Image 1 (spheres, rainbow, N blue to C red):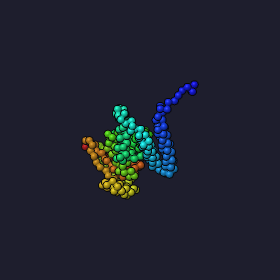
Image 2: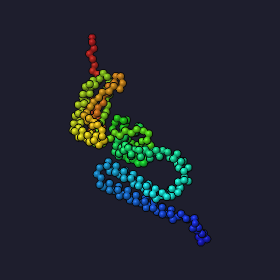
Image 3: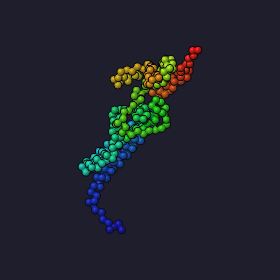
Image 4: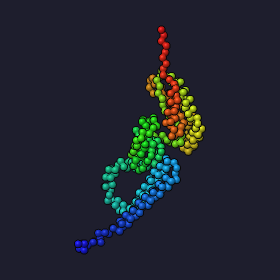
Length: 288
């Protein structure tokens, strides 16, 4: 049955070169897989901080993916060059079909080149706000913080943001100064309320809650200013007045705090000031 069939050697002219390329690709894949396993195990054993460990694991993984892609280009480069002229039309069609993927890769290059944020930073883009836990060539994953743009509690939801947004939308990094930040929150009052008394109470409370580490925050801001070439920001607690609408007074409280204690300090000041004071309009005596 099998003895009657003949094999034409000319039909397999390119079998040996292609086999060599496939073998090289498999070897490259195995080497990258082994490197990923070794580096991941090394990082988990030697890095004590969970945030730093997660950051290094993500960066090493992305680096190995880039190494694998470069290896494939080197291995298959000659074959790709021979096919370049014949696939121009197909390439144009692929560009149109994969425009969003190309934008995602472009956004990844843009945010990496601009150093927009790192793993663990709190970012906001459009209506998405949260802590960055993962990023790759196509998407960035955050743990949502909210509700709204003024609170600092994790909602428990995960959001995957396509990197294409970083090309067309402005990005806010709330963790730019990392260890210490100047946290700002707003408390609204009516025009007839005793907002002057509230302003003094919020200022005193802010000074009291920040006195333990204000000197460390000042030194840290000076260090950041030297590194970035920026003016040294004042870290003294401040309370400013804004009038967003007729009949309304908003007190804008700014206080230096540790990055991870923003929500705690804000709630502590609000409870301290609003829990034991009444700033509403007092009833006036009627003239008989």
